[in-house]
Image: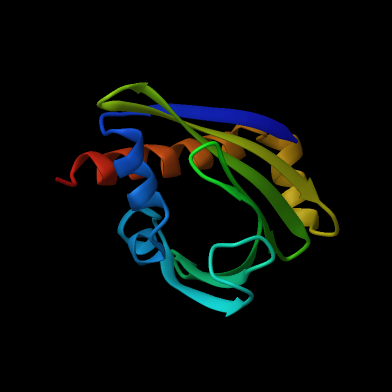
Length: 147
């Protein structure tokens, strides 16, 4: 399943990249994220792996991030894997003006052997895009609150 999301952020592209590129900021805008732990490789560079731990209600989840492309602001991409599901995300940033940035994500979900996720994808394909937009909106709110 492939889809694209985008949002305009009222901050210059350099400021948006500074906020996006700081892993200490992740818990400030990514709902449910409890921790981000670097595991291997050079942090933030292609090949680097990190462990993300989430709590969604009473449910706990762990996800592994593998960075594949780092060419900011043009692209920051990675694979996010958990329980038979892989999400490849391309994050792209471009200046609309000196004070406004377009943040665009290209998402591709591959569901391997997770029956529950396959059912969700078949019955409610919009749920995945809705969650992705929720994160973009949350990042926008966070970024615009920074001086």
